[in-house]
Image 1 (cartoon, helix red, strand yellow):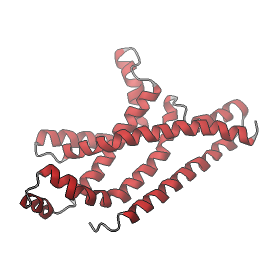
Image 2 (image 1 turned 120 degrees about the horizontal axis):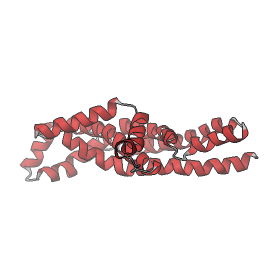
Image 3 (image 1 turned 180 degrees about the vertical axis):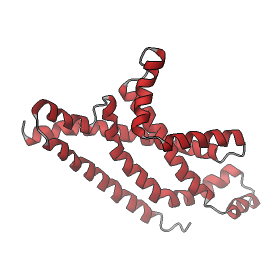
Image 4 (image 1 turned 45 degrees about the horizontal axis):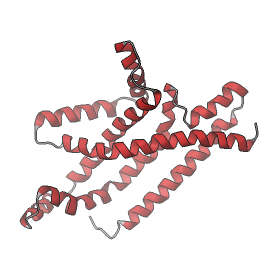
Length: 215
């Protein structure tokens, strides 16, 4: 096994890592906003239920959640319901949606009530005020904490291997088991470092693009 063949093999595993990352972001970002609205709902039972779910998800390890979602239905119903892939996507989506919801909630509640009142004075509906006046300010304020969570997501994808999802670390571990080769496991750090560096550059660029908008 030479360096380039191992590099290409790990690249296949990294493709699966990117799949977890992409699916999680695509689903968790909008779901997190919905959960945030639920947490801020004036209907107390709804807000209490939503905040309770967020508390449980944020207060327990992602690894434990993966195990429960993947193995739990099989233990309860006697037959597996989710594949390793679907269990991974579901767990990561719900987990990160709950984290994102708290970031959204903090951003939305940081906007002064006067801006909502100004929108009403101008004859705008609540939804128009939110999307045309509030949203851009919220986006600017949540970029730093959101970027931290997204970069954490890149590294958390490695947890999927515990339910036999064949992501990057899983591919590297095969060389330890089958050939007693350790260096591919450390080599995976290059993939993570490069990807997180690109994300860091992107978020810094995005922050500068929004500097004109003084929230």
